[in-house]
Amino acid sequence: MQRTELIDYVDTDDRIVRRGPRGQSGVAGLHYRVAATIVLAAPRHVLVYRRPATATVFAGHHDVLIGGSVRAGETYRQAARRELAEEFGLHAEPVERLRLTRSSPVGPCHLAVHTADLVPPLLPNPAEIAHHALWPVTGFLAAPPHPVVPVGLAVLRRLLG
Image 1 (spheres, one colour):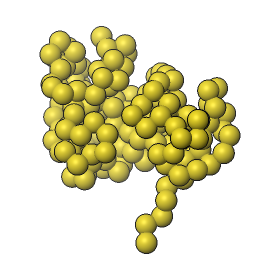
Image 2 (cartoon, one colour):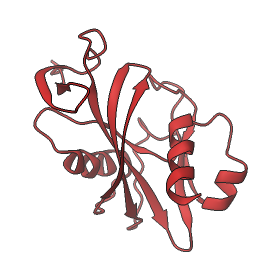
Image 3 (cartoon, one colour):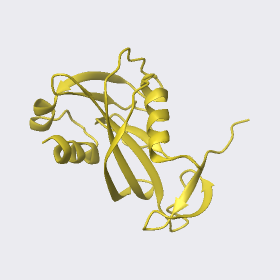
Image 4 (tube, rainbow, N blue to C red):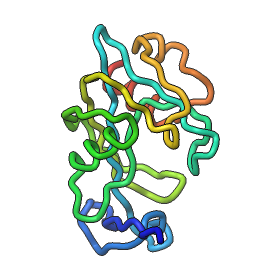
């Protein structure tokens, strides 16, 4: 029997209002929290991955933001660490660089963007990652692969462009 993943529903100021099942915050008229990390490698390369064709959101799209929903009781940084481990087997130390409030395909969210240095080995989870590669940041910004997750491209531009 699969357990329902609980998240904290928050208000527009990112204050916890209540807990509920993942994917229902928009229906409840509230926000949810997302933690994402851009993984960097020397010299000035970024880890780019393609989401599987079976992904619920942005199927088949390329992205630089590795992350997902912050679970109930987790901090943004704890969620960022967990997502790096779940998706790529990475045990890196994410550092928060930016927070945004934005709309998403499942409702409004607060997005905490982190960066982390690549600490090999990469062990991509095939359920989450269809393909991955290191790209020069300038090359990705000049000619991103198609299709690309728009917020990932925008955040990379803002932080490293």
